[in-house]
Amino acid sequence: MKNLAMKLAPASIPIAITLAIWFGVPVPEGVTPGAWHLLALFVGTIAAIIGKAAPIGVISVVAIALVALTGVTSGTPGGAIADALSGFSHPLIWLIGIAIMISRGLIKTGLGARIGYYFIALFGRKTIGIAYALGLSELILAPVTPSNTARGGGIIHPIMRSISASFGSTPEAGTSARIGRYLALVNYHTNPITSAMFVTATAPNPLAVKLVAEATGAQISLSWGTWALAMLLPGLVALLVMPLVVAWVYPPQIRDTPDAHRFALGKLGELGPVSRAEKVLLGVFGVLLVLWAGVPEMVLGKGYAVDPTTAAVGGLALLLLTGVLTWEDVLAEKSAWDTIVWFSALVMMATFLNKLGVVGWLAKSLEQGILDLGLGWTAASALLVLVYMYSHYFFASVTAHITAMFGAFYAAGIALGAPPMPFALILAAASSIMMTLTHYATGTSPIIYGSGYTTLGQWWFMGFIMSAVNLAVWLVVGGAWWSVLGYW
Image (cartoon, rainbow, N blue to C red):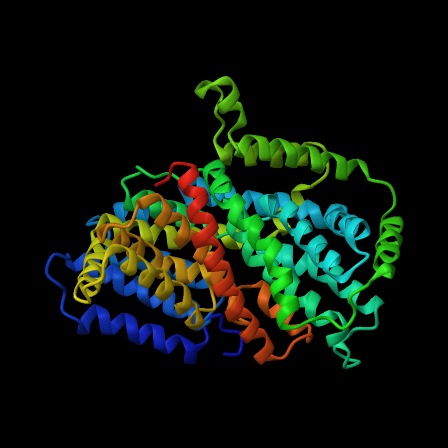
């Protein structure tokens, strides 16, 4: 019994919720029984993910099996299993999965650490310079590292801890306030900002892209280049402001750090000359960024456009052919395969909830509730964004949060009169900004919080402040920037 993948006590709640909706709640007018039963399965799945009843991959496979067995999407067994497995055919899912495989090369070759120590050697003579060096390192890695946990927790965090320890600032010695607490908070709060800046910077972002396209009948398609351009200016401003805000709230005791420069140079010396594998990896990353940004299409015309997933497959093929990665590396990248499975299940359920009219019904219900408050579209949109973002206090998964709420909230905002493109962008940004709030908000948070540099109160207080600051930056700077770009 101890080896059961599904934990019986946590699983009892989502099972009860599913059965209660399926059998206990009357099917609303305008919704078919099959659609309502799919909603019951969907809500139960999200509840299981939030309650950590089992690994998300296990929950997703169970969800796929239940959709096929119950036939909630199709009247035939063949159609039901085809629907249940349809998520695996979505290109965005494979874009993220393959990009995670490619990013494995950052750790394997040492290129990720080299980039971090290089910027610290360049800017690290003062504590604020180290903070910006950590942020710049994350920014460089973000477009090609869809696992924000691997980026912030696996690559940048060990560098941050090494720098802190070199100044005698460790939780064990009770000296976190010297410099470690400040750098740990900067390390963490860089992560949500960079995650908001690129479609490929965190795994759930393509889900938002898909939900926006579905809600607008594909009239709004957030391509990699469109997203990156729209998020560029507010993201850069947020990265500039964040270390100053953290220093204002929790100032480091050490402000001058000449030894950090020498320490970073020493680490670079240990890494040795740039290897052939690192050069190949840099070249592949450069090609991917050019293709993802749509440069060939812009320069040469539509006939030279390359699909982002096609580019990712080509990049992975090059790394395999050149030996930078081996097939064993690809097979061992469990997070990539895990992402492909859970992403496919959630995209499948979200797609059919939309096709069967459930999202539209939820959006209309939400719209009517806000109309009853007598709010104009501006206040209504602000309310939707705030409720969407701060409800993340109740979520331990960004993916579950986006899947559960993004589609309905976006559709409701559009129905209430919000400009479709800016509202899509602010909700997409909020989907990453909300990672700041808690020590369980995303995979990166327990890693950095768990290293012990801050108390729980300090973490939550700083998280709330940064959520407000980041949201203000995206609303003010982002709103003005999107106006310049002609999005409203």
